[in-house]
Length: 239
Image (cartoon, rainbow, N blue to C red; front, side, top):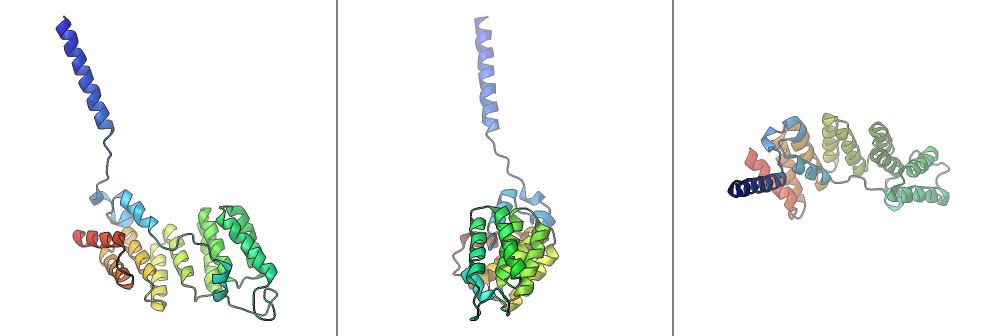
């Protein structure tokens, strides 16, 4: 009787150890089961890593950098020397501070005041678009960024931000068109090549085109981006 009790305890102990060991196993999705139109055959963890590497997401535009993008006109926003007036500068900087502090509601309100008085300030529209994107208001972000583009089509970052927003809206063809339009004007913009490569790989399943743009990105840069090098190797392996 004592023997059977000991044997039973031993069996229970082994079973508990086996269950504990099994609970620590981490399931990794099979990359080959991902649909090309959604994640480009990339496992979910790596898919999220790729998105984190999209360049230009949520980068506030400062007034000093914005000044180079202004489409200036003779209105109350400028002084006699063509510079943004101090009152408008202070309003913009307050909005920028709210944006930096994550106070998106205040940032929205303040940037709206800026663009209401000075709709030609593309940097204010650009930042407003990023605020809307933070708030998940993609349609508003799209409209704001298109206003930024209307104010100044010579700002490459507007194309980049707008492409990100329309991609998040599921408008992959429109995002591709924005990237390609920008690259016609700025063919050596390395980060644009990388972002377009990500769009092709993860959303369109166009692996050959993704490879072309990843490799172009590495050529234009210093070639030390180990993440993109890994992506290139992975794409070549999957072809």
